Image (cartoon, rainbow, N blue to C red; front, side):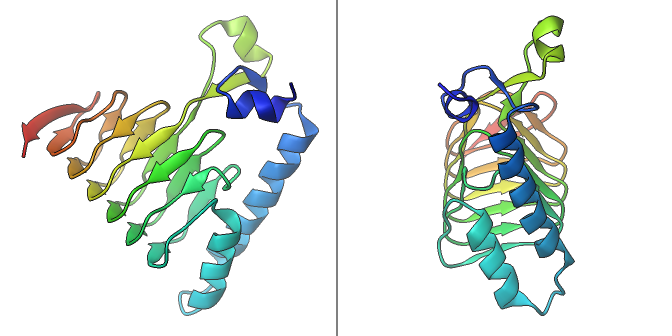
Length: 184
């Protein structure tokens, strides 16, 4: 099994020394850089670059620059998707967003993680688990969502939250760690 196959299966893999993964990240980061340098009025050029970066999109979406990701092809966004400035998605695993998802500025979605064992970590090994976000979800600014988390439908995640565990449908959640504070 090669390193990419390990990565996509959620196994420990070597992201730092595998030439094919390095090339894929470089390619994606170059596209992100091109995207981030476009003028606001260059809407069609921006759309083409995002469609080239992302695994799948629906018709209506907007990601304000700056936008950063690792591979892009693991990111899938639904209809009526909006992200404010400085969205970062570390996507060695799949990141799926439903319809009507709104993301405040400076948010991060991190599927990648590292072993707690220092020896393995120092070898450059990591693993990744998917993130899934339902429909009608709003993230306040400066939210971080960690690997393996599923967020349900009709959810509000308050600004500054660090989401470490699944959040069910129909609620408001916030904090560090993020917890449900109100059910709708």
